[in-house]
Amino acid sequence: MADSELAEADLMHLRRCVELASEAVDAGDFPFGSVLVASDGRVLAEDRNRENSLGDATRHPEFELARWAAANMTATERAAATVYTSGEHCPMCSAAHAWVGLGRIVYASSSEQLMAWQAELGASPPPVRPLPVSQVAPGLLVSGPAPGLAEQVGRLHRRFHGLRGEGQRAPRG
Ligand code: ZN
Image (cartoon, rainbow, N blue to C red; front, side, top):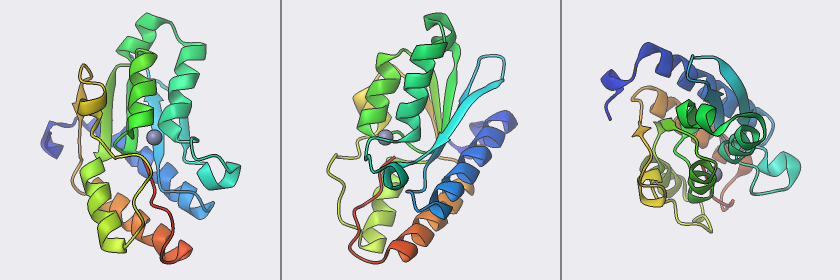
């Protein structure tokens, strides 16, 4: 989906996701951030990648938001909510999102773009194939990437890789 098809409210939430991804890099974590938004536009929860700071490679923000939604929202509320994220969900997070019955996903940058950046940076491949959300959870409404914001995410990956040096494990959405 093209940037022009994303509403200003969508872009506002995506910009917050990119801010969270930048905060993650500042903390030594992979550059990913996500926001959970209710059907009425209220921001319910947000998180960033915490893989390195918590020593747990499953601490992706999209997974945390899926768990938060399961604990704090009704099925109807989850289905009407949107998860915004700086990078398209990885298969683990796509599955968690679908299993808890969350609604639309909007991402700033795609898994395809992430793979291209990883190749450019010489990062080692992730242990899980970066399938698009549509291949893991085919029933979901998905929008993205957002040109301009996606380039900002790319710069965060370059900054993170520069801090970590060559040969580090590849980041995942
Ligand atoms: Zn993930």
